[in-house]
Image 1 (cartoon, rainbow, N blue to C red):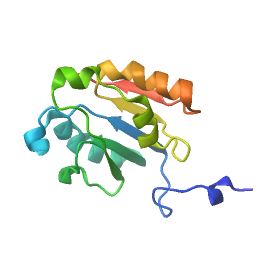
Image 2 (tube, rainbow, N blue to C red):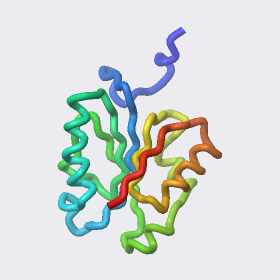
Image 3 (cartoon, rainbow, N blue to C red):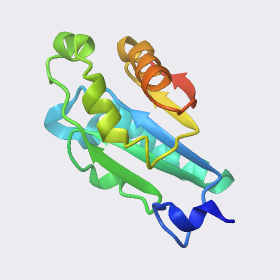
Image 4 (cartoon, rainbow, N blue to C red):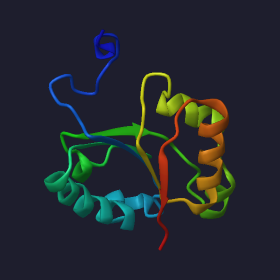
Length: 139
């Protein structure tokens, strides 16, 4: 029996080798297109698309037009804009609801918020069956 008949896919026509969730820190809120993480992702996603079939789910404070690739889903998630407050704020219940772990599986979590990386691992490992590799990035 093929279990994929009972599961939802991001795009039923497209099969992905990997699913990556990007948990970002967007510090330049006045112009997200100029934010350093957006600049990195705008280059990394097309590069990785040439090598692998990856579906990206990005946590973003609002839709970012330059990251609207066919294999990218932007999940709106508003963190506090003041950096010190944002770094100490992690809502595990909201995070788990947002990733919808019962219907989605992720191979890689790319965390751009070092203060939240351990929180993400704890939320996933203690409350779900997901065991993705977690990769951190900081300036």
